[in-house]
Length: 261
Image (cartoon, rainbow, N blue to C red):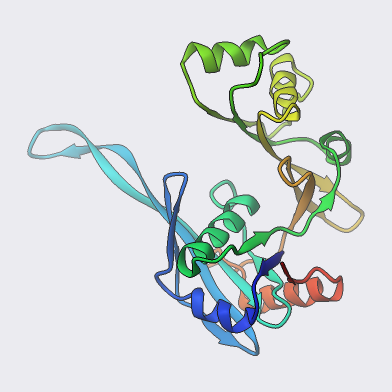
């Protein structure tokens, strides 16, 4: 991953990414947990809290009552204070590449008041090229905006947005067996985004001779990022610091480091 910001990056990051630094994005409140610097690497955890509703039994009412339930997930990260390379653990569907980088960027901007940018290292390609490169597509996240001037050839989206009087719509498609991306409705979604009226983040596995990686395509970045499987601590479910450190070394060796801008 790569960080893009102002001068004195290492010292500034250490000052900004402290426990309690917070930002709210898409109804999630993100926090930086405890951080520690070791051999010029900043280690920490970034996660979010939210809430849901559960039907819980009440002995007093002798009935089920709707009760708010807390929910949250955190992910460990490591940042080289020299190169600004960033490595972190995704957490299945709860913390993806784009949600993590967006939250970290939001916290840096919120705390500093400066125009920080956090971007995933990516290989530039079209969506069609990406589709041809993965084994299957297991998830597609769309955000739709109303078009200008019309919905020509996209009647389902027109019914959704205009019929419900929406200013925007978020749609998530999932299939472990693979989404049929040339299905009529999915084709509508893809064409709407290609015309500039929304965004698409799609996920799919890619098998090579040595490993299977999770590939993430983001239409706003016009490219893909890869998520590689690494062993996690079986007790905590989190990758160890040394694993993150090795990922930073690999990022540095391949030239995927931070820049100023």
